[in-house]
Image (cartoon, rainbow, N blue to C red; front, top):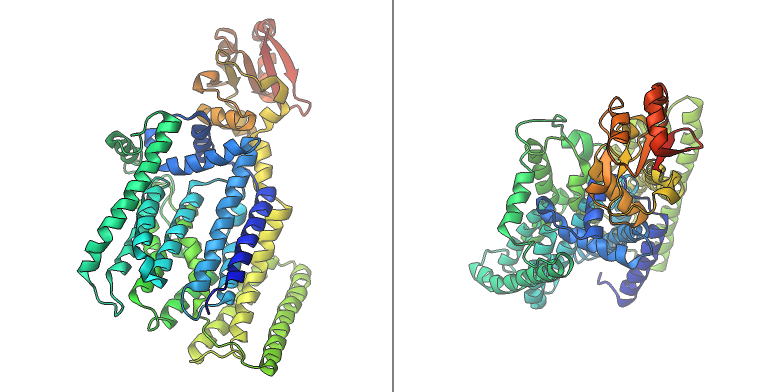
Length: 557
């Protein structure tokens, strides 16, 4: 079913509406890596070891510069990433095959919204999310080139540009370029080497455009147009990932931890679709189906190099296509007359009513049995639904509008609770905002006193701040980035001094010039036990206790 102009306009309008809603309700950054990228964008400095993050940094910087505050800019940026990705998820699912229709697009969007990244990374401008956006844009262009061979030279130029910009977002995006093999085939799926020679020129032009864009951005922002392509930058990147032979967290199975747990339904549908459509897919589209599997191999082998074991965000670039491909196995013809449509609509309404009714029964049942509702779903409800779905796929050779209601019932029933979870912990309860408030508690408590650190000032931060309360960080570089983000400032590492131990605190406060110091209440009680030390501190500093008796601010007289 060809996508109509009205459908395109509606899709664009809904994308804008969703972008606004996401930005308004988004959480906030809470991870140190993201604060560092934000700080690079705010202060415009070169960090060669993170040279393959600068497209993410520049894109994020654009939104921060356009917004009133960095926090607003980050939330708008995050909303932009998710909304545009959802738009492309719908479009790719809707147009993947000739028989794809709006149902495939809507199911793909619903599946994507159940992914934990919507809540765990709400408002968190993780570089992996930008990498996800770039990979999805690459697939969108690639699939468009498959549908319109006459536009392929233009598409190849766009792919060349996206390949470089994606690589300068994060190196994990490089594997998507294997899709170019699909353009080396003719209409009969035979390899044609002459297609390769025809591809080289537009690809190189696109690659050159991507490099030129980066040179302009590097020159304008960093004052160094060759920063991105300088060999020393690439050398620093590879050196940065040399962790040696050590594991901070042991490797674990991605299938057990992720694909057969958090992604059980979409991954199962993805596998079903690949097997069921095997004979209907040409090789270029089979390559698309291979990408999520290729990424599984990569993230698994990557644990040999990255010593932190299972990190789910590494798989984010593959999630949009996994969502777009998951519902593709649903192949049936719509009802052809009014009577059939009425029956079909009645069956769907009945299935929907059954889903809602079962949920209404199970929630009080779980409560009455002192049984966690999510555990009830995982142990009883979902296994039955999965079994029914698999039985349908095995038994039914040809899908029809009346029998497709069963798999739709199973899928919708398994999507309902994850979707309500996403709604609850995105629009109603924002854990990331709560964590952000904890991180920034010292800055929020002493907002007026700390708001104007000058180039010659130095802020002492207690070494117990993070350990005792989870405030700020134990890394002074993180604190610099957090301060700049919170106050829209531009201080450097010279402006922050991280204390070593409580025992050395009085000496560091009295013998070294500290303009201000933020201590924990336990630190202040420790100082009060030493009369001489307390006298020396009070001689040089005025005190401003936190009304909550968690912190103490010292200001040099």
